[in-house]
Amino acid sequence: MFLDQIKTFVLLSALTFLLLIIGFALGGTSGLAVALIITIIINTLSYWYSDKIVLKMYNAKKAGHSEYQKLHEIVKEISIRASIKNPKVYIIDSENPNAFATGRNEKKAIIAVTKGLLELLSEQELKGVIAHEIGHIKNKDLLISTVSVILASAIAYIAVMARWFMIFGGSREGDSMGIAEIIVLSIVAPLSATILRLAISRSREFIADETGARIIRDPEALANALIKLESAPKLKEGNRAASNLFIVNPFSSNSFFKLFSTHPSTTDRVKKLRKLSFSMV
Image (cartoon, rainbow, N blue to C red):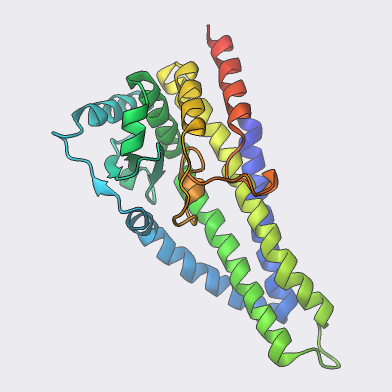
């Protein structure tokens, strides 16, 4: 787990460094200042409203205590084990079995699960999934995920500005940057930012798996749940913007290279969980 934490720190630092390089390259100290201002604005808006945006995106509704009593009991039980405040529980009206956690911090945390998840999993497997999401909350992944998305978005925005500069400003004699340099920044920079952001997401999934498995002391339950979720039919359409938040990618990713996957392979996750299970015997 410690190595994964270090990896996350390095990747976040790389994103920040990439942002600073782009800002400075485009406009020197002035460009750097503009890049930082943009990041601060996006950061502020995302910090206060990101959870509401995500819940609205998937049309999630509060889970009634009477209708979803067992689910609330499981969330409360695992929250007590993890020594965190009981998060709010939301339901997504989707047959795709999945779940995610959101919120700007532990006190404002929310766990959302789909109806398909409740229908597919056994009680112990459901505990494994809830423990994984509570693992994200306990490890403060909600903030890390938001920061990585914000930085990657800022880089993409600056890259768009660079392309417009190339189109309308061109490269005049005496300019600090030529057309070739601007092309590199406007294409390679956002691509690099995306790769770094997805790498952060994959790293945090491994950590949440281990944290959740240790909370309920049953790695096999989460491993079995992941196998079922991976085998379930994927969504054919929908908003992919927050797909990295889910415990497994809700969309089919067969057409993408592994480099661009928002999640580590289920096979690798199951292997690590079963290795952990063996060590806990």
